[in-house]
Figure 1: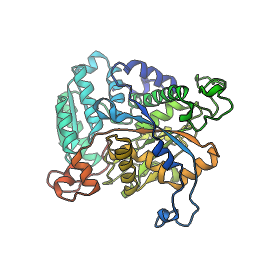
Figure 2: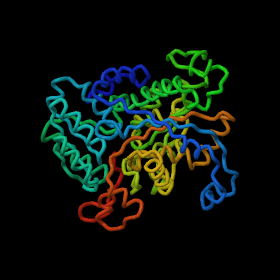
Figure 3: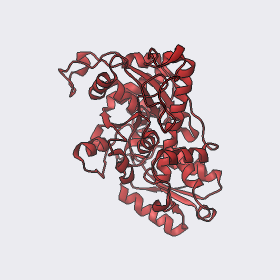
Figure 4: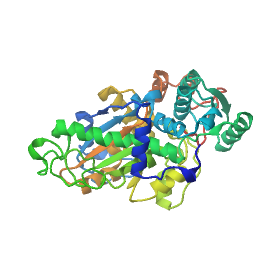
Length: 423
């Protein structure tokens, strides 16, 4: 990878430069709306639903939320990670590319780097924990990469990656913490904000602000002030009030926060709470960066700790307003809604942001307080769709060991050994 000291700074203009560079290699994924899910989010939870939760006894919040879903499950390789992988490789010199690349990943970054490397004829060596889901292993091999198995701990993976580097001379391309990766992932937000503006310009009723007196004749953004970024600095149709993304290693959230810095759009992160996978939320609460995660959350793409460079962005309250965490059951409920109501095939990690909007009373109370009667237009990044029917069957009902292996909770020997695994 390029020397970190020589990379573009983590600012909006750098994300724009990254998008210009990679846009020919990535899909412009769709932004979809759902009246059903927006209505659900805008309906208070019942007191019974809050029983046995930290919110028991509270008056349920009553926010108004309209959703705009950025569907990165339709991205090349089925996840947003293609953006960072292409940007990282396109920043390398021809001499650097010739050396090949190596990384450690449980699946989505593995596939993304393997695919991008094949595009440019670059040798790719992917260190994958043995516990990685079979579908992701086979997809990575299918893109032409050499797959080398390792243990699941960070130390075990790093030892194997170092051995591969020594053997091949390949450059290490991390899943989440290099600025080139972060800037690439941030291009998701640039597309999202533009697509929402276009959608609301055509149909202002999609926005909670469609009755805003500053919008003329229902035609979206027409009379609001424009800031230095060329975007509206006030609430109104077409301007997202907030964007929420999943948080694992932090590349996506820090990239989106960098892209939207100064635009007036608030940025939030979402994590699973199971077995301490909410290290981002806990890090912000304590003011100390947590550097270890050992979780078997069903959101397998988020079974890793937030890395240091993303932490420097995410811990900046001017860039990331907050991080919230949801339970396994809430993730399943959100996933079921997306599968059944929106007819979109997603993996569990993709829906943690939606789950926060639907079920986290602290977040919902924040929207109610700050959004008032109008409410918020919220962009939700559905980060990927790399799962299988068998894995989905397992997490909803199936119990046999073969399905547990498909869900990425058992290694080939039938042992549950996932520890701090980057997606």
